[in-house]
Length: 63
Ligand SMILES: [Zn+2]
Image (cartoon, rainbow, N blue to C red):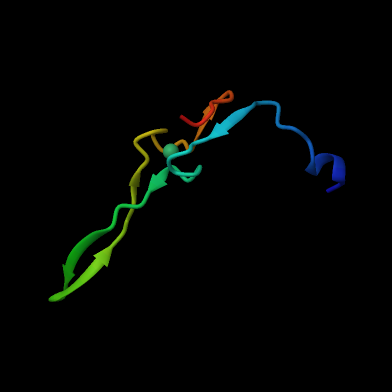
């Protein structure tokens, strides 16, 4: 890998989702009772803003 490849600008401009940070999932902590013990559960849920893609095509400023 040379430096030119590393710093290359991607051909397709996109904006990382402001809601989930590009991960496509947002935190969704819940309280669950597992084997009689209350424990927090956080499986996350799909980002409602970008629909799990984590980014949008083009440049979209945060609102
Ligand atoms: Zn998102």
